[in-house]
Length: 39
Image 1 (cartoon, rainbow, N blue to C red):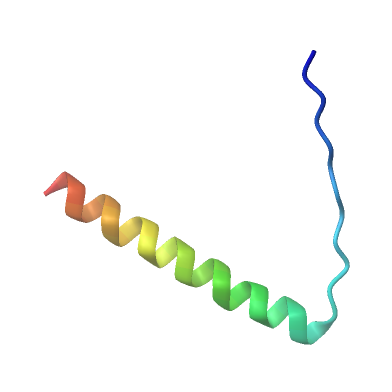
Image 2: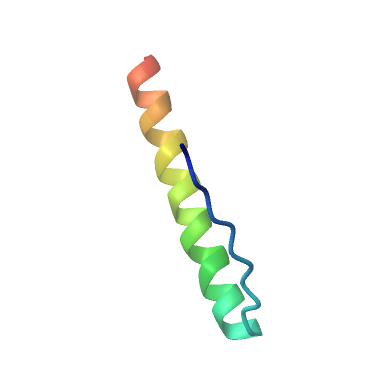
């Protein structure tokens, strides 16, 4: 049996901005490495 949990976050403006920067960095790194692997 597989059990999954979902959580909602309600960050304040500062935390949300920091999360945006972190996710942008992860997205950039993923896309860069994917492009490098495909060339």
